Image (cartoon, rainbow, N blue to C red):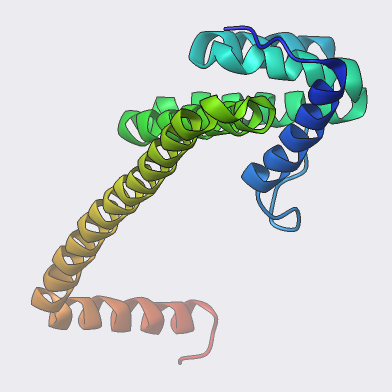
Length: 193
């Protein structure tokens, strides 16, 4: 879908997109530093966007034409995200799917915000409804990710409890083994005669 807007509307739209991307990116202090912009990373980031949310392409193109530095930053952020998702997919397919869906939904919300700011009044109620649905989906995804984290922590806790039970069962034996180890160590170091 292509948006056709007057030049001034595009300028406002690009500024709004930049502000929205800053909000989606989160606090700067806690974020890892971005990779350096390269043509290869740009190609990889754009391939990622085309594959997973092509509606973002026209907006990125507008940012590229109006603010090259901001465009390069956005590309680097998308590249970094795509790399992180690739690594995540190797280790945790379920979390990967949720994180990818969250990115797609955030991108969809970004497109909706851009369209909402540049659309005629008659289109706004429908776009606002779509934006509300995107917000609802983002909250659901956040909750799904929290549920997944709880499952992981419960699994870890169960493993730690099992390990503790085994340690308690063999407590006396472990005390004796540790005592002999320490006693032998002292003998080897010449502390015992």
